[in-house]
Length: 300
Length: 300
Image 1 (cartoon, rainbow over the protein chains, first blue to last red):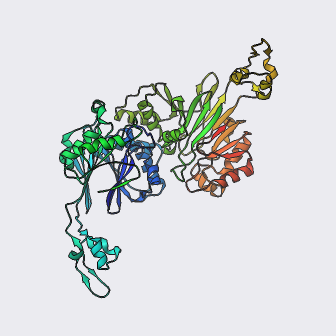
Image 2: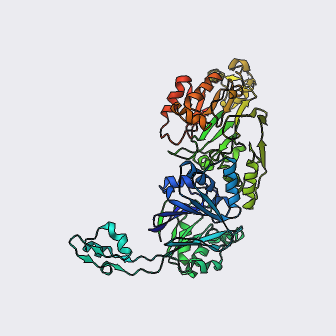
Image 3: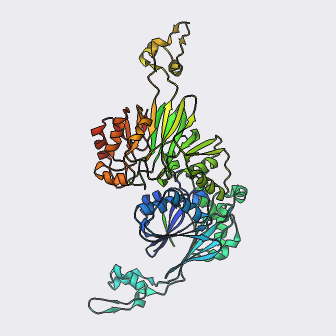
């Protein structure tokens, strides 16, 4: 599974039961956390996100609504006796802020914490199947977006055909990896009978906080899904511009020009109690848009 | 009204829908915040605490479950265009931690923020009607309790008698201040007909995190209400001791020896999913004990 689950979709202050920015990218049984506003650990409990599966956290920038929950999460991992190493990536001086707070509390973590400082567009992580890169966005302070790109291209399974050949569901992942299936009676089901070659590798881009800026496009081009902020509706375009934020229409324009398959919009201003207008405005420009709703997982 | 409303009653990590430490002391229309664990601003929204009425925040110590929500609250006050000055009291280096985080976000607060460093038992605040003092508790790191003592002693009103004399309810506060009431027909209701001299000034003590320590007693003696932590039940007394925490029985012993009127217990370990045993254990030693429940206001 390659998906993103929204934990917080609001900007600035919590309001209307919406929370500051945080989302979990799930790939191949691992959870990657992107941003960590205050209360993220409580949202994880609410939405049953397995905290023990988190090995990497990516922080876009040091406005509080994107990272005030980080120190609490790091601390709680310690109290919950998390053993796995934890890697945190973010701009300076995130490392100093976290280390100062851990030091004054005389915190002893039972796991290794690695605080990595991002200073430019870079490759942050390479696993066997996934890469994570960061790119600069255009915000009031230093800010980065993140692109998750699948490396391994598994074959596309036709579940109807797999069912016809009586292949157990437990074997489906191995079919996607190209294996043949040998039935108990010795009959061999050839992989190509039930699968097709995979399409291109899937890609998800989190565009962080940013004003409208077409220089983002090369980084997110052709993505299966992007998340772009839409703090305001387009009638407040000047306010958005002056605060280095985007409108719904602008997010949709970026999605359209970047040729992405689907757009997820979030980071709504607390001045809006309902969100329908954001979706409506964006869909006029880019029909395949959805609101980023808390607790919802969007498949990539 | 003199009361304390619990916003968080759990220790360390959030669990079982219990939140880290925070409480609001209400006196004479002002709200004083004591500790500010992560998510306090969301709990304030949940329990309809008027954030605009908060002018003073007291932080007991720099373990995260007592202050990780502070920077978010300070930030949100700014975004909500709070105008009133805000005074925050806490041990070093709280001031540096907050200032660093505000600086890196290029935060411009629309109100004056005063960060006061506590270094010893001290008088922190004197208003016309209330004083707030701090005292050292016995914890793993520098930690302070807070005592709220009423100065003004209003007279005790007998509402039955006030009703007999046809005095409007709107005048009751002035009766408590000792005024006579003149009816429309010119008849003067003498104050002493409907009120009695006040009792001693009321007092509330928040004992923060602490191991069992009788040196706290002089600071909280005779209080109308104290809040004392009870991280564990008494069968884990050694664990409590080693972690500089108290058991339910120990909290009750302190309350008994200090001759207080009522005990409120909280700061429960996340290992307990239910709380009845805490109350039971404390009541065996000190019957007038109540569990500190989130969202509940306890009159002082």
